[in-house]
Image 1 (spheres, rainbow, N blue to C red):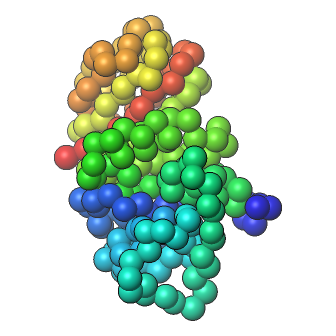
Image 2: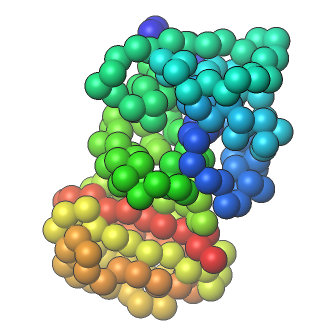
Image 3: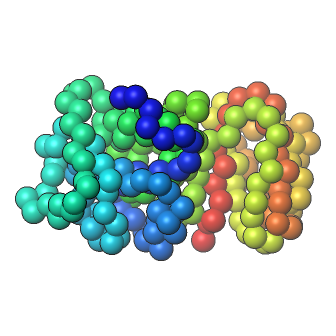
Length: 210
């Protein structure tokens, strides 16, 4: 599909549980479009949101669909890609720079594991932000300035071996080696900005945690 937008953000709604609806609605307010997996139409209705696009093979549509004017059903019958993958590909093809994703983690563990893996290998031009009890995004090599509330909890979880410098937090690091499954949980911001340098590799940045 030819790109239709220039950068900006979209919201993708999947069928998992949504523990913090207010967070999702706030994200939707900053987005140009809402993209909904076919089986998540009911989730969108629960949030009071009307999808611009419903994407998938349409085999999971609810019996009663709250169709609104302007909704477009984009059929993708590829059996080798999940509805989340199809939504990510659709968002990338639309030209979005960022996709907020709700409903990716709550529910079945196998679905959550697959969705985390898909977010980790999303197209490089698409910044994927998972919304659940907090928000998570993958950060790659380079310098990052992370905006947080003073005292807010955040975590850095390595996807592979990665060295980091981090300051502006309760537990600063310099040249620290993080491994998958190693330390990085529950740091705290001292001010409104945390400075992070990632030296090779990638990691998850989780913020807005309870």
